[in-house]
Image 1 (cartoon, rainbow, N blue to C red):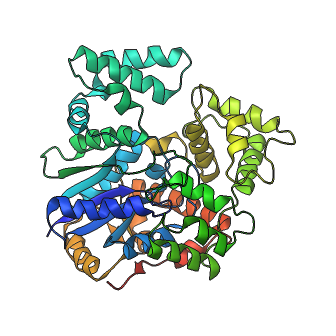
Image 2: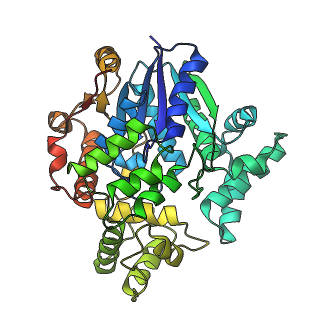
Amino acid sequence: MRVIGIIAEFNPFHNGHEYLIRKAREIVDDPRAIVMPVMSGFFTQRGLPAVCPPAVRARQALLCGADVVLELPFSFSCAPSSRFAEGAVSELISTGVVTDIAFGVDTGDTELLKALAETDFANDESFNIKLNEYISTGISFPEARAKAIKDIAASKGITGDLDQVLSSPNSILALDYLIALKKFDWKNRINVIMIKREGEGYHSEELNADFASATSIRRAVLEQAPSFSQSKIASALNGHMPDLSLGAMLSSASSGIFSFPDYVGYIRNCMITAASSSSLENTAYMSDDLSGYIKNFANDIRPGTITDDDHDLEVFGNKISTKRYTLSRIYRALASMVTGQDDSYLAIKRVPYIRVLGFNSEGKYCLKIMGKCAKVPVINRPSDCLELCSGNEELKKIFELDMRAASIGWDLYGRNTASEWESIPVIVKK
């Protein structure tokens, strides 16, 4: 049985995601291959809650080609690219059934990515020296890391369009996936499938192509705030998302399964929490004086900093981000603050359990096999974790953090904060 693992956020599920699933099956030359995405939960890698709850995004994926959808826990999904990659790759390998891992890239030079991944940057003293030198100049960590990688690559004779590769978010993630695979798949059992991204760029805000970016699609949704007219959203996104995906999102919203999130309210609550906290220093991602900066910013909020009509937080983002502190890092730090994630969680390097968000009939068969092969516990609902928590401290910490993130998420989606305890896997008939 061929099982293709895909790492994604589906925030929300769009044409590019459907293309990735279809292309992965074409490359392995098996139209019946099981596709198993591992997907961010309530919070995404850029640090903000997703535009739809995990169950809705899982349904979108299952309706559009996926067979089993797994959830990536908060501590790994709302994290820098290296931790995001390690969590997703470790979870897919822990299933015991994944034979391939597929992901999108923004470059056709996949050999360059492979060459870069062969360099053990994390344990390269010269790389760490270069990295710290660049950080000391005041540039952001992603910029410093890209510059340090470029320098070390040049010293090792690795050639190619390094500027293009290292400036692309998807390619940086791809590099981190390859590095994570080296770490967790040391027997090289997993086949890697890198698929060239089609359409608009990762952060493109233009909704003018069949393969529109997730950023542009989210912006089109948020432009309809606060009323979120179903007809206007449908009109704006027609052709930019698969019909089944768009239909699943809109029908879930109209039936009360969720309300589109109020990011203004969320960020105001974050600022109140930051201002009233005695200390943020031990909060994850608050190092390098970020804790003091955020507290000072929160205490100095003035009218116009977070306006009622700033539904996509563009104005707020421009005000709070700096050259030193990127917006994604600030959002991840704030998410860690409101969920109670301190630095101790970051010492957990592998996902300690697998949460199944949904499946179809083909996926159900795969899950039966996975139940016998998985290297960590597989759960279908939160209550499944309660017994497991007593004997596994890491699992307990990650599970309780996930439930706190879910509580914040459901509140943002207009539901009871305890709604996650009633969640069961989405089942879609194929």
